[in-house]
Length: 369
Image (cartoon, rainbow, N blue to C red; front, top):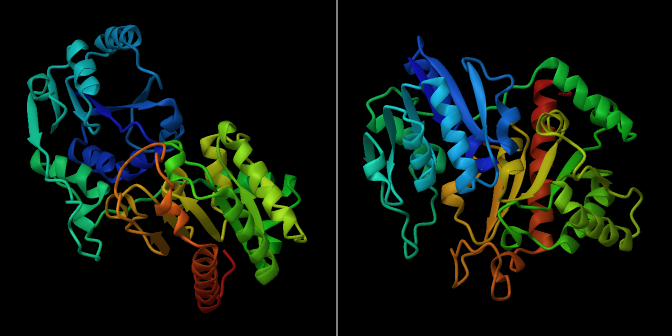
């Protein structure tokens, strides 16, 4: 049997769906399993075992592009597709490709396109006042529940982990050396490498002000001799420049380094594997760092951390339940109060706490990595 697994569109959601992909592979050990994903996520699967092949989905799936892609899929003669996205277009593409079995959630008016349409669980109510995050509300569980309702075996406590080879680990070290940083020496000297992720592909509504990232860079350098490294896409390079300018106004010793638009996904993964901390908006790189077990300070604005917070510890989520939350807007039409309410002092305190806890655990284990 040949199975096509349609992964989510966003990088972060794709990472959260990895336990479900691996569960599928375990449920169908004799099958030939293929993955369909957008280009932004393809590199995740280069070292993923149990996958026969990967097919790319255009970032902008127009009608003509979808028709061409469906004709190409017909040539593979897939027997079954499992759709993690909720979109109508993902089901329509599978139907046009003539895949006999099409399984996914009943959503977006697409039930008639599916051969097994699973009812979605009710959304978290905006009026719900419970402060405790329940793991069953999380997006990672949402994907696993699809398989569970299809009578497939899934883990009770999923692990979200990115595989990284020794060669990739060394590649990350060499990249840092090219920037004048030796991560081994820095750890021996207890100088943390802090990654700043000021962007969010979803839209500016998720972005904490860049001036505040600059404040953090200056104060972390002052407090711990931390070196800050800014990551992001090529389109987010202006955010890095704004952070550097804000940090320089504080007259710090070392200017934050800028890697925006200068790494592939696998290269970014290799660099992140050396980080002591990431300070980040709700985004794909947040989940990437968390999957590598890098401590994360996550800043949530219009979205709900109960759905997409970092899955593993150590992490610290900062979030303000303002009157208009959650809105899910890509661009805030008001005063961006949800993120503006998160202060520099709060983020600095959370960052120092995670760095100190991580250092204490390293001392207990007696190792530097």
